[in-house]
Image 1 (cartoon, chains in turn cyan, green):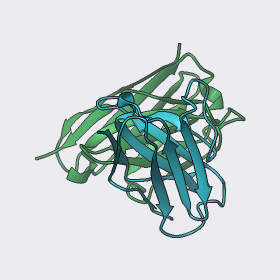
Image 2 (cartoon, chains in turn orange, red):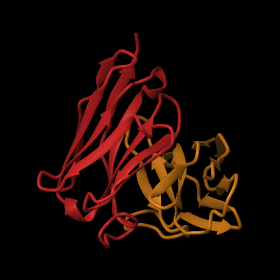
Image 3 (tube, chains in turn blue, orange):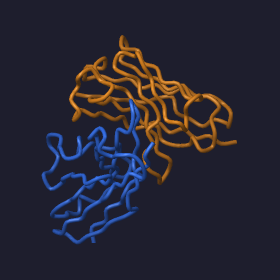
Image 4 (cartoon, one colour):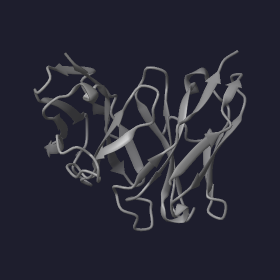
Length: 110
Length: 124
């Protein structure tokens, strides 16, 4: 199955935008169109912030947006704020009842 | 109020077994896919296993296939993970997760509930 590669870290100043990529190393990330993103604060469980590539659950900030181009999905955080500092993970449904997570990206607000 | 609570973690020796349990409330357990996901210290998330909403099928990551067994009891709103022949590399926090979408009975994709995790340490 595909492995999902994310940058280990990204950073930006308050108010800037940052984009986290999630690249599938093999196969088609878009076969099922089921890419999701999670945010995790230290010591806490992951929280779903994007599902089905670009949809936001109720209550998730519109500053978070997802997209996909070819075999790479992306999460963009616009108007970066201090409380955006967290780890972010992509996740893809890659085969029948099989999921894969990316390695995670730490977002730092400078 | 949704609750997902794992239990059964602990320190065990290599080669031994451990059974994690997850009890839930506040949502229609029998309509959701139930997963186990783990996270080693300072590392990323690793999906391990899923039990379909009706318990008819279970699927596993290659890393645990043949050693771990997921099971669910819809009458008790619980899901278990039996872990056999444990290795040092199985040391992690183990999360129980309920999800809509694939493996659920038409539960929306945006419904996604996680517990706070159970720590499993495998060490001699």
